[in-house]
Image 1 (tube, rainbow, N blue to C red):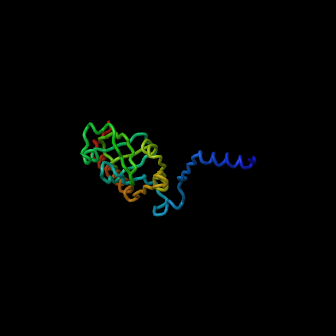
Image 2 (image 1 turned 45 degrees about the vertical axis):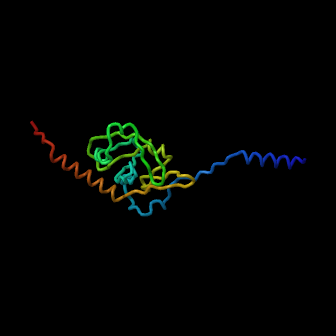
Image 3 (image 1 turned 180 degrees about the vertical axis):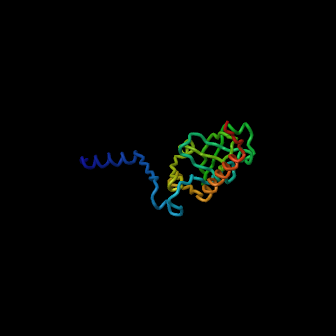
Length: 175
């Protein structure tokens, strides 16, 4: 048997044994900004499927390390105290990511906030500039697209809430 044939057989058997995993690159480009009003500084607000319901006004906060749920959503999902230990948050498709939410009884224009643990569990990347979240799903890259108008509505609601709170606050008199 020739040396070339032995090398070819060795190479062929090595290729058969090796499992080459090809992953698509997740990135953002100017094309991802199409459909957004630029420039902007809006929050990344999406709709997620949580507990079998499409939940609007969910902010993706890549700077936070906890997922937050506000009381309206907690009550709307008919959750009980025992449900606070772990919670499934399904996305588009059949991807399910289990995260733990902290219920915060405070005003927020958002129904929930998902943060780094959710992004990491999903293997996702987010871009506030492009107002999108991308994550691997099988051999595809899926996208969660923002609702820029909802983000702006949340900002207005926050400003109005702050104005009302300030007008109701007791006025301190100078002595």
